[in-house]
Image (cartoon, rainbow, N blue to C red; front, top):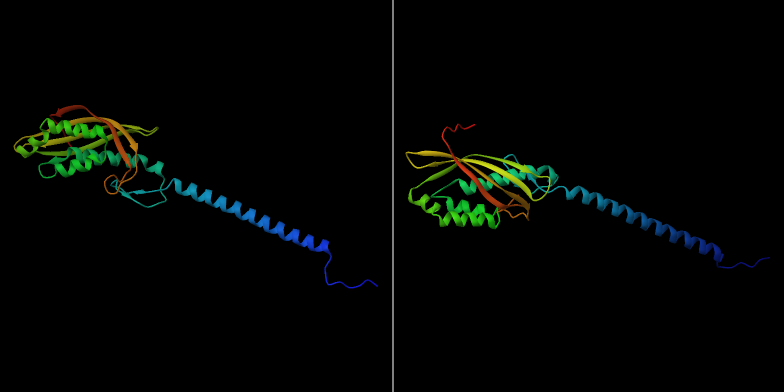
Length: 208
């Protein structure tokens, strides 16, 4: 008769231990794989989402909107905002408007501002109480590759009291991405290589 022993067969114990170890390892690997897949999916969903642009071009810091889809809208809004600040000026607002405009462009914009200041443009604005009012802004963009080229046609009038003259100004330049700066540069774009190409007087301008 075989004597009883308080210990189980050593091989059965080893098999059980090996089964437990394999189960834990497989579970850990599966958990890691699932976690990595979830992180990748979340990253892909969030990398293309950032901000909402409403109908007037303002930026709201929300998610679930494709950056690429909004690029053209934001670029056009940025250009319209800049040209409004830079050219829609009078004696009461020109300092405030120009300060805001300088946030939207690089040194090429600042150089043009300094040139106009040296030429006495803003002094005449004060001296004769001129009102320069933007009537329309139309921009064409090339957003295939950065920097994004643009051409903008700005129509504005200069009110000299009894005389009102209307002008068409064509400007060109590039747009590059920069960090968003609320509220100074909400679109995260910067105008570079800005240049005033042509300026002509419109004798028979009719608003569209």
